[in-house]
Length: 496
Image 1 (cartoon, rainbow, N blue to C red):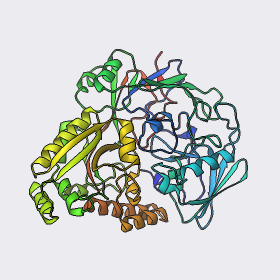
Image 2 (tube, rainbow, N blue to C red):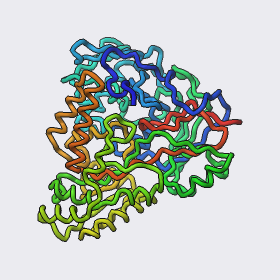
Image 3 (cartoon, rainbow, N blue to C red):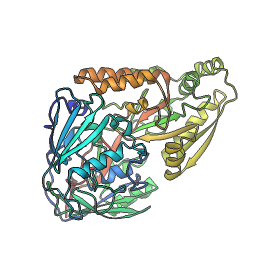
Image 4 (cartoon, rainbow, N blue to C red):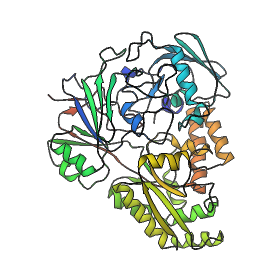
């Protein structure tokens, strides 16, 4: 991971712009062919600042809606609607200068008032954005003119440009993403829930225009159906392969290409840390030690992927492979920890979004815990129920979820996040990492934070899934890597 992502604001904002970013598969020329992309990750809503789902950011951020900054495919913080920014000597004031001449998709000019509104909504008390706690370092927003936004902070935050990449800028007063209030290289045409989301090229885009005339994300509930659609030519690209079962039919076929790149997808079984008995560290540690992560990974992905012992994925500089040994599989130690905690005949619920990988993982957890006398009741739900019950209301005991966000280890410093883990030392380290003066200092601090949670086990981190895409031969311009939530589509072309 680049120093730009870790410490993106040691000085002024001279990071590359949206049109300068690279990391794409091949050098693509413009094409007349619409791009059809298959995915199982559909948005749950177009409401802003709700968190809990990566579907909307994966499909529309950077493509339809843009922030002052973005995270490029290669993991760098890049200037987007901010042409540049300045940082005061004390690090407490950021001044962003907007790209001139930017219009929303309805023709309304972008002004600093729009940026101020969008940021203020992201940090409001009502915001459920996963990054809200990181952004609440902002204590005041000023707009001295239409092209300038000044953010005053209550403490230094070298990571602010990284955190701001999660805030897309819409028109002043808007609370939902619409077909009118984007600024990106595509306009939103329609979202037919449960079926598809269609984008068309914005020919009035302020930056480098998209190389294809439009993109449709086709949503699938079943991976087999999605792969069959690719085989029959109904789609051009599978965004994320969910298992290795059908890879062989593509890897040896010259009509297709299979890529494997950096991944940030972590499968996490997490506990509600405010609910007994999961408020007892020994119980959480016991449940973690009872889980055979190697067996789970093999059952889902065979020889692909890597087991985890804390939240950071392999691509982040605070990742540490030795963390997997802290609570290595040991049923006898797990039984002893439960006895030490005075817990016996434990019954627990496991809430999860139904899916093929989820079912495999849940059944493995259930079997492992039965070996230590713990009974698991699986509770499959759909995305919307999970978002309301688990993410919003925090009404659950344990839950399984895949996290697709960079630097989300820092969410363990937020006691209001859905796992409700409250550790003042972790919170102190998070703020110190924000104020770090060098990349090396920041890495050391977040590594220490990661090690604390690895020991205390507020979650049971299972494994990092591989990032595998499958495309038709002749489809180029897409990134094999996933270093952030958005999937940038403007460079993708297909042979006519």
